[in-house]
Image (cartoon, rainbow, N blue to C red; front, side, top):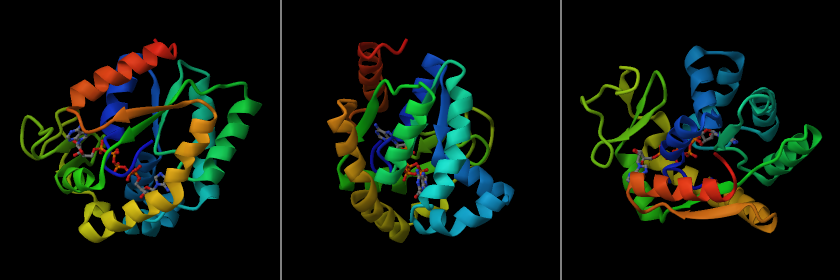
Length: 213
Ligand code: AP5
């Protein structure tokens, strides 16, 4: 968890590679569906591109089947879900019903002024969604993804007005979800202002503490 631009996707890519987990990122799934023009993509497009949340029932349906399939393997990492209390409560019910448990909820804390410069310099791969930053995390060749050779683009929701809306929505809808997990004793706070590798090393320590190998 964490606000837009906190570095969730950047750290998630490292974690799933290192621990052999399935990466379930609701934003990535939605952007893929939008690019493919599927019925879900058509329904979600205006929400995603204007920085509003896609309605809970659509998101819950979209993620539940993927999560249950992944839980039968070596485990999964949720990125960008849950984002409302209704989503968190639905997740609680789903995992309880299927005998799955959450090891930890990682919350990456970053102040707003840092988020703005991160989102302003972000470039994302059209093909595999890997993220870069023009100065903090540049690709080896400008405009080309190191991982898949795809084209790097500026996300439609990384314009200044949509970023402002995403930050507002985060405070109103998603920040309260951290309290839900703090009450359950699952929340682990991470200082997201350090360099990418140093945050990653801190997350590895946390994951070891909660028994994720
Ligand atoms: P989503 O794709 O989840 O967007 P987000 O939460 O706004 O998060 P971002 O992807 O913008 O940021 P991030 O934290 O992953 O940061 P990143 O690693 O890229 O969701 C998009 C939209 O989909 C939502 O607005 C909504 O419409 C919809 N949606 C998704 N999930 C939903 C749900 N559950 N319910 C309803 N609607 C949903 O890093 C950012 C930049 O910073 C990069 O350039 C990176 O290289 C750089 N960077 C990262 N770490 C560092 C560091 N330590 N130092 C310097 N630079 C860094």
